[in-house]
Length: 138
Image 1 (tube, rainbow, N blue to C red):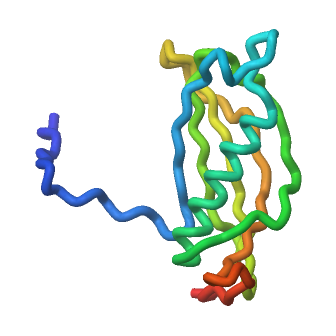
Image 2: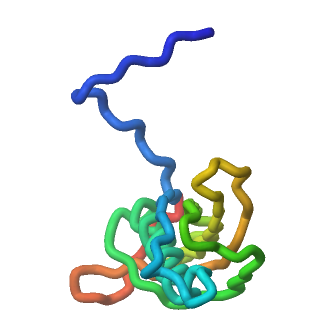
């Protein structure tokens, strides 16, 4: 069995993939409805954050949300679940980016992760004045 790689406080974090972001959340009681399911609005806010982080990494600057489309809620997310959000920029336009966000849930018991929700977010790169700015297509 190979030895695990040794790291120190000075070891740099591996660079992220351009246009990708991952966020982990834990579903607390304050995040749920009376049935113990995650509020949809809280989940959409988490997804918007993952989309923004991916778009910021890709565009190297500030972004705003222009549109949300195709949200699909397939599997309930319950109190106590761990949630991983994965945002990936899948298309770059002149000033906008389309980000696909997947939401994976797993119980704290370590069950197999399930794809619970996904959707697409259109993010627009903005300058210091809040006006759209070009995104490098490369």
